[in-house]
Image 1 (cartoon, rainbow, N blue to C red):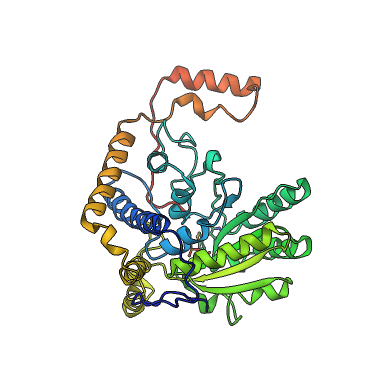
Image 2 (cartoon, helix red, strand yellow):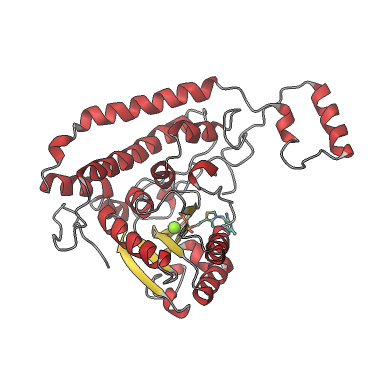
Length: 365
Ligand SMILES: Cc1ncc(C[n+]2csc(CCOP(=O)(O)OP(=O)(O)O)c2C)c(N)n1
Ligand SMILES: [Mg+2]
């Protein structure tokens, strides 16, 4: 498995990409922002202020590391567990929080499930809930770019569970045959809700699956952000140069529940969680920064407070925004509303009722 930084922060100097100090500090900051956002949003959900949340604690390095090497013209096809990728792309924190509330300021006007956020401005495609469906889409977009002669790379995120879906096979096969500029980023977080990785596939690794499709698969320590940056950068350079796709298996762990509707203590041993806590991606990167004597640049307590304040302000603004206007139920589907829908809309608007749907905390995600 490719790794640059060990759990205690010691690192292989020959492999260290020696990124500019400013970038390193920004990576740390973004990973901490994701962790903080997770804690804050889960507690908002517990307070009944948002309906649902998908946490990604433990997977911050995969998300930030994989998007770090991308260029603005590249495209990200996420699943539902990559806020770090969104934030690194430049998705504004406020826009994410609006989406969690599904209010009038939400870019998706409250029509999507919580955590299914997308943003055209930063080439971040809205995910769909069915597991793995983003994989053929990312390959198709990459193929279109190749035909047009655009030097665009598509990065698709999916989980270990998604490798059992037909869409994974279709996407990988097509990418191999047509040599599309696609990076398949599998976050192997060891679980697909309550199904462990061993019950997902009899293959030794997930990376090995790339061989059957005729391209390279690599196993990377997904809790080592520098390894993630380096591996994805190499895959992006290869894709841009016409070398085709790469599968990256990022070996990581989902520290929290699958979603706010899940209780993982019912199916996984506490000792496993503890074991992975010692490999935490944020404290590992902090160890690296200390060893490089860059840590002095960071005042951790002040940074934590600043991020907390930023999120508090985003929540305050989002809670003040009204729910989406009633007529948005009917808009944006047809360029011109057909008569039967117009009639329904008029009747609906006349009823004048401001019904807010009950947001169940039992979304079937
Ligand atoms: C086609 C389909 N089957 C089942 C589900 C329910 N479901 C949602 S997430 C999930 C597990 C996915 O696991 P994995 O791909 O490992 O991603 P992770 O949640 O671990 O990030 C399942 C079974 C779904 N959304 N779509
Ligand atoms: Mg998983």
